Image (tube, helix red, strand yellow):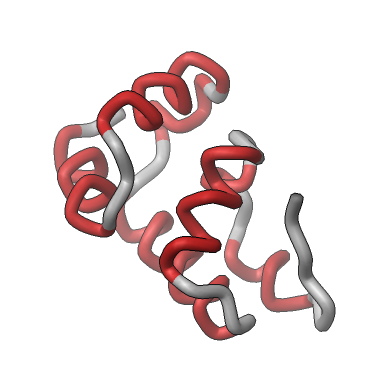
Length: 81
């Protein structure tokens, strides 16, 4: 994971250990740009997710962080386990 993205996610509220696990389970996160992560988080916030729900959703669904924000925007009733 790029340092700029890592720092942003830590500042947002992610735990360092969760980010290490995220890197191990989703190798595409290495290529993720900070701007893409910001767009995704904003898209989830616009859907009504709280910061805690966003962090938990990404921690529980490792591929979510690399999902395109435009895909998130298409769903009206988005829910994660």
